[in-house]
Amino acid sequence: MEEDKGFDFQQALQEIQAGKPLLGKEGFLTPLIKKLTEAALEAELDSHLGREISANRRNGKGTKTIKSLNGNFDLRTPRDRDGTFSPQLVKKHQTTLNDEIEQKIIALYGLGMSYKDISSHIEEMYGIEVSSGTLSAVTDKIIHTVKEWQARPLEALYPIVWLDAINYKIRENGKVVSKAVYTILGVNLEGRKEVLGLYLSEHEGANFWLQVLTDLTNRGVKDILIACVDGLKGFPEAIETVFPNTEVQLCIVHQIRNSLKYVGSKNQKEFMGDLKRIYKASNKELAAEELNILDGKWSDKYPIVIKSWRNNWERLSQYFKYPEDIRRIIYTTNTIEAVHRQFRKLTKTKGAFPNQDSLLKLLYLGIQNASKKWTMPIQNWSLTLSQLAIFFEGRLDKELKL
Image 1 (cartoon, rainbow, N blue to C red):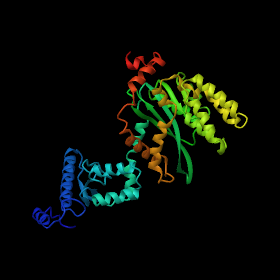
Image 2 (spheres, rainbow, N blue to C red; image 1 turned 90 degrees about the horizontal axis):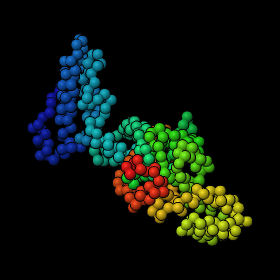
Image 3 (cartoon, rainbow, N blue to C red; image 1 turned 60 degrees about the vertical axis):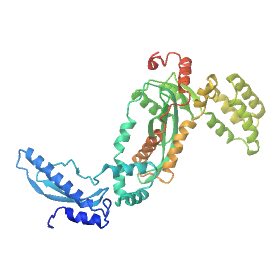
Image 4 (cartoon, one colour; image 1 turned 90 degrees about the vertical axis):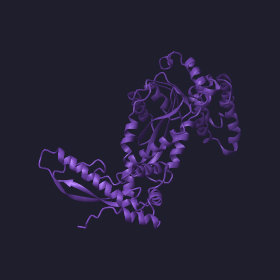
Protein backbone atom coordinates (compact mmCIF):
# COMPACT_ATOMS: atom_id res chain seq x y z
CA MET A 1 0.00 0.00 0.00
CA GLU A 2 1.26 3.49 -0.83
CA GLU A 3 2.46 5.43 2.22
CA ASP A 4 0.15 8.26 3.29
CA LYS A 5 2.46 11.29 3.38
CA GLY A 6 -0.07 13.95 4.35
CA PHE A 7 -0.39 17.44 2.95
CA ASP A 8 2.84 19.37 2.38
CA PHE A 9 2.17 23.06 3.10
CA GLN A 10 5.63 24.15 2.04
CA GLN A 11 5.18 22.47 -1.33
CA ALA A 12 1.73 24.09 -1.66
CA LEU A 13 3.27 27.52 -1.04
CA GLN A 14 5.88 26.91 -3.72
CA GLU A 15 3.16 25.83 -6.16
CA ILE A 16 1.21 29.04 -5.51
CA GLN A 17 4.33 31.09 -6.16
CA ALA A 18 4.86 29.10 -9.36
CA GLY A 19 1.38 30.07 -10.56
CA LYS A 20 -0.47 26.80 -9.96
CA PRO A 21 -4.24 27.43 -9.62
CA LEU A 22 -5.88 27.28 -6.22
CA LEU A 23 -9.13 25.69 -7.40
CA GLY A 24 -10.20 23.42 -10.26
CA LYS A 25 -9.04 20.07 -11.56
CA GLU A 26 -5.36 21.06 -11.36
CA GLY A 27 -5.73 23.10 -8.17
CA PHE A 28 -3.35 22.30 -5.32
CA LEU A 29 -6.18 22.41 -2.74
CA THR A 30 -7.60 19.09 -3.95
CA PRO A 31 -5.20 16.88 -1.92
CA LEU A 32 -5.85 19.00 1.19
CA ILE A 33 -9.61 18.54 0.81
CA LYS A 34 -9.02 14.83 0.35
CA LYS A 35 -6.96 14.64 3.55
CA LEU A 36 -9.45 16.65 5.62
CA THR A 37 -12.38 14.59 4.35
CA GLU A 38 -10.66 11.29 5.08
CA ALA A 39 -9.68 12.50 8.56
CA ALA A 40 -13.29 13.51 9.26
CA LEU A 41 -14.53 10.08 8.14
CA GLU A 42 -12.01 8.39 10.43
CA ALA A 43 -13.30 10.52 13.31
CA GLU A 44 -16.88 9.56 12.45
CA LEU A 45 -15.97 5.86 12.56
CA ASP A 46 -14.14 6.30 15.89
CA SER A 47 -17.26 7.88 17.34
CA HIS A 48 -19.43 5.09 15.93
CA LEU A 49 -17.25 2.33 17.33
CA GLY A 50 -17.15 4.12 20.67
CA ARG A 51 -20.94 3.84 20.90
CA GLU A 52 -21.02 0.17 19.85
CA ILE A 53 -21.53 -2.33 22.68
CA SER A 54 -20.56 -5.30 20.48
CA ALA A 55 -17.06 -6.27 19.40
CA ASN A 56 -17.46 -4.36 16.16
CA ARG A 57 -14.16 -2.97 14.85
CA ARG A 58 -12.50 -1.49 11.78
CA ASN A 59 -12.45 -3.52 8.61
CA GLY A 60 -10.18 -1.83 6.10
CA LYS A 61 -11.09 0.88 3.62
CA GLY A 62 -12.88 1.26 0.35
CA THR A 63 -12.16 3.74 -2.42
CA LYS A 64 -14.50 5.81 -4.55
CA THR A 65 -14.03 8.76 -6.87
CA ILE A 66 -15.45 12.02 -5.52
CA LYS A 67 -16.35 14.98 -7.71
CA SER A 68 -15.91 18.37 -6.07
CA LEU A 69 -15.64 21.97 -7.19
CA ASN A 70 -11.91 21.67 -6.57
CA GLY A 71 -11.39 18.63 -8.79
CA ASN A 72 -11.87 14.87 -8.71
CA PHE A 73 -10.03 12.70 -6.21
CA ASP A 74 -10.07 9.12 -4.91
CA LEU A 75 -11.47 9.07 -1.38
CA ARG A 76 -10.51 6.26 0.98
CA THR A 77 -13.56 5.50 3.14
CA PRO A 78 -13.18 3.47 6.35
CA ARG A 79 -15.42 0.46 7.00
CA ASP A 80 -16.49 -1.52 10.06
CA ARG A 81 -16.82 -5.30 10.32
CA ASP A 82 -20.57 -5.30 11.16
CA GLY A 83 -21.44 -2.92 8.35
CA THR A 84 -23.40 -0.63 10.69
CA PHE A 85 -21.27 2.48 10.04
CA SER A 86 -23.14 5.07 8.00
CA PRO A 87 -20.97 8.18 7.46
CA GLN A 88 -22.70 11.57 7.36
CA LEU A 89 -20.06 13.82 5.78
CA VAL A 90 -19.85 11.71 2.63
CA LYS A 91 -22.75 9.29 2.68
CA LYS A 92 -22.80 5.84 1.14
CA HIS A 93 -23.14 6.02 -2.66
CA GLN A 94 -22.51 9.80 -2.57
CA THR A 95 -20.14 10.83 -5.35
CA THR A 96 -20.14 14.62 -5.05
CA LEU A 97 -18.70 16.62 -2.19
CA ASN A 98 -20.59 19.84 -2.80
CA ASP A 99 -24.32 20.38 -3.37
CA GLU A 100 -23.48 23.31 -5.63
CA ILE A 101 -22.57 20.95 -8.46
CA GLU A 102 -25.85 19.07 -8.19
CA GLN A 103 -27.82 22.31 -7.95
CA LYS A 104 -26.06 23.58 -11.06
CA ILE A 105 -26.85 20.35 -12.94
CA ILE A 106 -30.53 20.54 -11.97
CA ALA A 107 -30.70 24.22 -12.91
CA LEU A 108 -29.20 23.55 -16.35
CA TYR A 109 -31.53 20.58 -16.87
CA GLY A 110 -34.46 22.82 -15.93
CA LEU A 111 -33.49 25.16 -18.78
CA GLY A 112 -33.94 22.31 -21.26
CA MET A 113 -30.24 21.55 -21.84
CA SER A 114 -29.30 18.05 -22.96
CA TYR A 115 -27.12 15.80 -20.80
CA LYS A 116 -24.33 16.19 -23.35
CA ASP A 117 -24.44 20.00 -23.12
CA ILE A 118 -24.68 19.91 -19.32
CA SER A 119 -21.64 17.61 -19.12
CA SER A 120 -19.63 19.97 -21.33
CA HIS A 121 -20.72 22.98 -19.29
CA ILE A 122 -19.81 21.38 -15.94
CA GLU A 123 -16.41 20.29 -17.26
CA GLU A 124 -15.73 23.78 -18.59
CA MET A 125 -16.74 25.46 -15.32
CA TYR A 126 -15.31 23.05 -12.76
CA GLY A 127 -12.99 20.74 -14.68
CA ILE A 128 -15.13 17.74 -13.68
CA GLU A 129 -16.16 14.99 -16.08
CA VAL A 130 -19.77 13.91 -15.44
CA SER A 131 -21.31 10.92 -17.21
CA SER A 132 -24.89 10.75 -18.50
CA GLY A 133 -25.61 8.12 -15.85
CA THR A 134 -24.48 10.49 -13.11
CA LEU A 135 -26.52 13.34 -14.56
CA SER A 136 -29.59 11.12 -14.67
CA ALA A 137 -29.03 10.06 -11.07
CA VAL A 138 -28.71 13.69 -9.95
CA THR A 139 -31.84 14.89 -11.75
CA ASP A 140 -33.76 11.83 -10.53
CA LYS A 141 -33.31 13.12 -6.98
CA ILE A 142 -36.07 15.65 -7.59
CA ILE A 143 -38.65 12.99 -8.50
CA HIS A 144 -39.60 12.64 -4.83
CA THR A 145 -40.01 16.42 -4.68
CA VAL A 146 -42.24 16.29 -7.78
CA LYS A 147 -44.46 13.62 -6.18
CA GLU A 148 -44.79 15.68 -3.02
CA TRP A 149 -45.61 18.77 -5.08
CA GLN A 150 -48.30 16.87 -7.00
CA ALA A 151 -49.95 15.83 -3.71
CA ARG A 152 -49.54 19.09 -1.79
CA PRO A 153 -52.62 20.66 -0.11
CA LEU A 154 -54.35 23.45 -2.04
CA GLU A 155 -56.42 26.45 -1.06
CA ALA A 156 -60.16 26.04 -0.51
CA LEU A 157 -61.17 28.49 -3.26
CA TYR A 158 -59.68 29.63 -6.55
CA PRO A 159 -61.53 32.48 -8.30
CA ILE A 160 -60.35 31.52 -11.80
CA VAL A 161 -58.85 28.29 -13.14
CA TRP A 162 -57.67 27.33 -16.64
CA LEU A 163 -57.50 23.69 -17.69
CA ASP A 164 -55.77 22.30 -20.79
CA ALA A 165 -53.69 19.35 -22.00
CA ILE A 166 -50.55 18.93 -24.08
CA ASN A 167 -49.24 15.72 -25.70
CA TYR A 168 -45.79 14.12 -25.50
CA LYS A 169 -44.09 10.96 -26.73
CA ILE A 170 -42.88 8.50 -24.07
CA ARG A 171 -41.18 5.12 -24.40
CA GLU A 172 -43.21 2.39 -22.77
CA ASN A 173 -42.63 -1.37 -23.00
CA GLY A 174 -40.29 -0.90 -25.95
CA LYS A 175 -42.73 1.28 -27.87
CA VAL A 176 -43.18 5.03 -28.27
CA VAL A 177 -46.65 6.05 -27.10
CA SER A 178 -48.45 9.38 -26.89
CA LYS A 179 -49.37 10.68 -23.43
CA ALA A 180 -51.46 13.70 -22.50
CA VAL A 181 -50.18 15.97 -19.73
CA TYR A 182 -53.12 17.64 -18.01
CA THR A 183 -52.25 21.07 -16.64
CA ILE A 184 -54.33 23.08 -14.19
CA LEU A 185 -53.41 26.75 -13.72
CA GLY A 186 -55.22 28.81 -11.12
CA VAL A 187 -55.34 32.34 -9.80
CA ASN A 188 -55.37 32.42 -6.02
CA LEU A 189 -57.06 35.01 -3.82
CA GLU A 190 -53.95 37.20 -3.92
CA GLY A 191 -54.22 37.32 -7.73
CA ARG A 192 -51.07 35.30 -8.35
CA LYS A 193 -50.87 32.46 -10.86
CA GLU A 194 -50.15 28.97 -9.56
CA VAL A 195 -49.96 25.61 -11.33
CA LEU A 196 -52.19 23.41 -9.20
CA GLY A 197 -51.16 20.13 -10.76
CA LEU A 198 -49.79 18.02 -13.61
CA TYR A 199 -51.33 14.66 -14.50
CA LEU A 200 -50.50 12.07 -17.18
CA SER A 201 -52.92 9.90 -19.14
CA GLU A 202 -53.08 8.03 -22.46
CA HIS A 203 -54.93 10.85 -24.20
CA GLU A 204 -57.06 13.86 -23.38
CA GLY A 205 -60.65 13.02 -22.48
CA ALA A 206 -63.48 14.18 -20.25
CA ASN A 207 -63.37 10.97 -18.19
CA PHE A 208 -59.81 11.54 -17.09
CA TRP A 209 -60.50 15.23 -16.45
CA LEU A 210 -63.15 13.99 -14.00
CA GLN A 211 -60.42 12.13 -12.09
CA VAL A 212 -58.20 15.21 -12.14
CA LEU A 213 -60.94 17.44 -10.74
CA THR A 214 -61.74 14.86 -8.07
CA ASP A 215 -58.08 14.92 -7.04
CA LEU A 216 -58.34 18.71 -6.58
CA THR A 217 -61.17 18.20 -4.10
CA ASN A 218 -59.14 15.56 -2.26
CA ARG A 219 -56.34 18.10 -1.92
CA GLY A 220 -58.63 20.70 -0.38
CA VAL A 221 -60.28 22.66 -3.20
CA LYS A 222 -63.93 23.28 -2.33
CA ASP A 223 -64.94 25.92 -4.87
CA ILE A 224 -63.93 27.40 -8.22
CA LEU A 225 -65.79 30.46 -9.47
CA ILE A 226 -64.91 30.37 -13.18
CA ALA A 227 -63.25 27.56 -15.15
CA CYS A 228 -61.84 28.38 -18.59
CA VAL A 229 -61.49 25.45 -21.00
CA ASP A 230 -61.28 24.58 -24.68
CA GLY A 231 -64.10 22.91 -26.59
CA LEU A 232 -63.38 19.28 -25.62
CA LYS A 233 -66.64 17.34 -25.70
CA GLY A 234 -67.94 16.52 -22.23
CA PHE A 235 -65.42 18.77 -20.48
CA PRO A 236 -67.93 21.30 -19.04
CA GLU A 237 -70.13 18.46 -17.79
CA ALA A 238 -67.12 16.86 -16.05
CA ILE A 239 -66.38 20.15 -14.28
CA GLU A 240 -69.98 20.63 -13.20
CA THR A 241 -70.13 17.08 -11.85
CA VAL A 242 -67.37 17.85 -9.32
CA PHE A 243 -67.95 21.61 -8.92
CA PRO A 244 -71.66 22.13 -9.63
CA ASN A 245 -71.58 25.87 -8.91
CA THR A 246 -68.62 26.63 -11.17
CA GLU A 247 -69.26 28.74 -14.24
CA VAL A 248 -67.63 27.30 -17.37
CA GLN A 249 -66.30 29.65 -20.04
CA LEU A 250 -65.35 28.07 -23.36
CA CYS A 251 -62.31 29.57 -25.06
CA ILE A 252 -63.33 31.97 -27.82
CA VAL A 253 -59.96 31.60 -29.56
CA HIS A 254 -60.33 27.81 -29.77
CA GLN A 255 -63.84 28.20 -31.14
CA ILE A 256 -62.62 30.60 -33.84
CA ARG A 257 -59.72 28.32 -34.82
CA ASN A 258 -62.01 25.32 -35.08
CA SER A 259 -64.50 27.32 -37.16
CA LEU A 260 -61.92 28.48 -39.69
CA LYS A 261 -60.88 24.87 -40.35
CA TYR A 262 -64.19 24.40 -42.16
CA VAL A 263 -64.28 27.75 -44.00
CA GLY A 264 -62.86 28.00 -47.51
CA SER A 265 -59.68 30.06 -47.80
CA LYS A 266 -61.33 32.61 -50.12
CA ASN A 267 -64.01 33.31 -47.48
CA GLN A 268 -61.90 33.23 -44.34
CA LYS A 269 -61.12 36.96 -44.18
CA GLU A 270 -64.77 37.97 -44.59
CA PHE A 271 -65.97 35.24 -42.23
CA MET A 272 -63.43 36.30 -39.59
CA GLY A 273 -64.70 39.88 -39.82
CA ASP A 274 -68.23 38.68 -39.11
CA LEU A 275 -67.03 36.58 -36.16
CA LYS A 276 -65.15 39.55 -34.73
CA ARG A 277 -68.39 41.52 -34.50
CA ILE A 278 -69.76 38.72 -32.34
CA TYR A 279 -66.99 38.27 -29.78
CA LYS A 280 -66.10 41.99 -29.68
CA ALA A 281 -69.70 43.06 -29.02
CA SER A 282 -70.28 45.24 -25.97
CA ASN A 283 -72.90 42.92 -24.47
CA LYS A 284 -74.50 39.52 -24.92
CA GLU A 285 -77.65 40.86 -26.62
CA LEU A 286 -75.67 42.59 -29.38
CA ALA A 287 -73.45 39.52 -29.74
CA ALA A 288 -76.55 37.33 -30.17
CA GLU A 289 -77.83 39.64 -32.90
CA GLU A 290 -74.50 39.40 -34.72
CA LEU A 291 -74.66 35.62 -34.40
CA ASN A 292 -78.09 35.69 -36.07
CA ILE A 293 -76.61 37.75 -38.91
CA LEU A 294 -73.76 35.24 -39.26
CA ASP A 295 -76.30 32.44 -39.33
CA GLY A 296 -78.38 34.06 -42.06
CA LYS A 297 -75.33 34.86 -44.17
CA TRP A 298 -73.30 31.65 -43.92
CA SER A 299 -75.50 28.78 -42.69
CA ASP A 300 -76.17 27.42 -46.19
CA LYS A 301 -72.46 27.30 -47.01
CA TYR A 302 -71.02 26.33 -43.59
CA PRO A 303 -73.82 24.70 -41.55
CA ILE A 304 -71.42 22.72 -39.32
CA VAL A 305 -69.71 25.93 -38.17
CA ILE A 306 -72.94 27.74 -37.41
CA LYS A 307 -74.32 24.73 -35.56
CA SER A 308 -71.20 24.63 -33.37
CA TRP A 309 -71.63 28.29 -32.38
CA ARG A 310 -75.31 27.71 -31.63
CA ASN A 311 -74.71 24.57 -29.55
CA ASN A 312 -71.91 26.17 -27.51
CA TRP A 313 -73.34 29.69 -27.31
CA GLU A 314 -74.30 29.72 -23.63
CA ARG A 315 -70.83 28.72 -22.49
CA LEU A 316 -69.08 30.82 -25.13
CA SER A 317 -70.98 33.95 -24.09
CA GLN A 318 -70.54 33.80 -20.30
CA TYR A 319 -67.87 36.51 -20.33
CA PHE A 320 -70.21 39.20 -21.70
CA LYS A 321 -71.80 39.68 -18.26
CA TYR A 322 -68.52 40.88 -16.75
CA PRO A 323 -66.54 44.14 -16.84
CA GLU A 324 -63.54 44.42 -19.16
CA ASP A 325 -60.92 43.39 -16.56
CA ILE A 326 -62.64 40.04 -15.97
CA ARG A 327 -63.48 39.52 -19.66
CA ARG A 328 -59.85 39.91 -20.62
CA ILE A 329 -58.81 37.18 -18.18
CA ILE A 330 -61.43 34.53 -18.95
CA TYR A 331 -62.44 34.75 -22.62
CA THR A 332 -59.46 32.65 -23.75
CA THR A 333 -57.17 29.92 -22.44
CA ASN A 334 -54.10 31.80 -23.71
CA THR A 335 -52.90 32.14 -20.11
CA ILE A 336 -52.38 28.40 -19.72
CA GLU A 337 -51.21 28.04 -23.32
CA ALA A 338 -48.37 30.42 -22.42
CA VAL A 339 -47.29 27.84 -19.82
CA HIS A 340 -47.45 25.13 -22.46
CA ARG A 341 -45.30 27.24 -24.76
CA GLN A 342 -42.67 27.28 -22.04
CA PHE A 343 -42.97 23.49 -21.80
CA ARG A 344 -42.39 23.17 -25.54
CA LYS A 345 -39.24 25.28 -25.33
CA LEU A 346 -37.86 22.89 -22.71
CA THR A 347 -38.81 19.71 -24.54
CA LYS A 348 -38.38 20.60 -28.23
CA THR A 349 -35.00 18.83 -28.51
CA LYS A 350 -35.84 15.83 -26.34
CA GLY A 351 -37.69 13.54 -28.75
CA ALA A 352 -39.39 10.65 -26.96
CA PHE A 353 -38.87 10.60 -23.17
CA PRO A 354 -37.52 7.34 -21.69
CA ASN A 355 -40.28 7.26 -19.04
CA GLN A 356 -42.97 9.36 -17.38
CA ASP A 357 -40.75 10.53 -14.52
CA SER A 358 -38.17 11.98 -16.93
CA LEU A 359 -40.92 14.12 -18.48
CA LEU A 360 -42.52 15.16 -15.20
CA LYS A 361 -39.26 16.25 -13.58
CA LEU A 362 -38.44 18.50 -16.56
CA LEU A 363 -41.92 20.06 -16.63
CA TYR A 364 -41.79 20.56 -12.86
CA LEU A 365 -38.50 22.44 -13.13
CA GLY A 366 -40.02 24.50 -15.95
CA ILE A 367 -42.91 25.44 -13.65
CA GLN A 368 -40.51 26.43 -10.87
CA ASN A 369 -38.62 28.69 -13.30
CA ALA A 370 -41.83 30.24 -14.63
CA SER A 371 -43.28 30.82 -11.17
CA LYS A 372 -40.28 32.99 -10.27
CA LYS A 373 -41.83 35.59 -12.58
CA TRP A 374 -45.30 35.25 -11.07
CA THR A 375 -44.53 37.48 -8.13
CA MET A 376 -47.05 40.20 -8.92
CA PRO A 377 -50.83 39.81 -8.94
CA ILE A 378 -52.83 40.06 -12.15
CA GLN A 379 -53.40 43.63 -13.31
CA ASN A 380 -56.17 45.43 -11.37
CA TRP A 381 -56.70 42.32 -9.25
CA SER A 382 -58.15 44.14 -6.21
CA LEU A 383 -60.89 45.63 -8.37
CA THR A 384 -61.42 42.31 -10.16
CA LEU A 385 -61.80 40.44 -6.87
CA SER A 386 -64.29 43.01 -5.61
CA GLN A 387 -66.33 42.59 -8.78
CA LEU A 388 -66.23 38.79 -8.49
CA ALA A 389 -67.46 39.07 -4.89
CA ILE A 390 -70.53 40.88 -6.24
CA PHE A 391 -71.19 38.48 -9.14
CA PHE A 392 -70.69 35.43 -6.92
CA GLU A 393 -72.45 36.75 -3.86
CA GLY A 394 -71.52 35.04 -0.62
CA ARG A 395 -68.97 32.59 -2.04
CA LEU A 396 -65.95 34.77 -1.28
CA ASP A 397 -67.15 36.02 2.11
CA LYS A 398 -65.41 33.38 4.23
CA GLU A 399 -62.06 33.64 2.43
CA LEU A 400 -62.10 37.44 2.36
CA LYS A 401 -63.50 37.62 5.92
CA LEU A 402 -66.34 39.89 4.79
